[in-house]
Length: 220
Image (cartoon, rainbow, N blue to C red):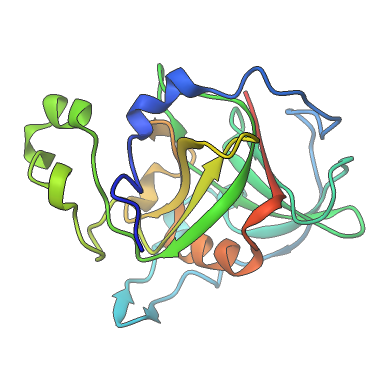
């Protein structure tokens, strides 16, 4: 069963930031890490659940935002997701001091957030429900507030979405999701959520098991 509000309200999310949560030692924001393997060839066309995702012109995306395995020192356990907002990276922690690093798009001014959460659930090809506040700013999306925009190549949530809840089990309204807007990766352009290239969110989605053990740490 889909949540009626399963998506967006990302534009409301700034007021629910997780800043009061505790933190643990993690790699410094500006730390340089060594690349072990890069997957620049992993952005070709994809047939997925009846949808034909187009190839990404990955040569137009800065190579540092291509999916890659890097050296990464952290006190967090494997399976943790660490979002380095200033550098526009998302790390999925692997055993042995490694991580999968993805390029991301982050919240623009006024929609940034930080703290800790967990992946409560995840959805393939989700429906998008913009909040009323967004519809007031962008009348062209008002038609989707109640009925939602169904899954598809134009859906702002892309091919996958992961829903972040706080330790009290409440929806933070923040999402990690795919996006058809590949050119926005590496920028601050979203309404608070963390966006990824569709080929990357499919890769990350397959690695993540929802539940309180899958921690998400967002750095500002």
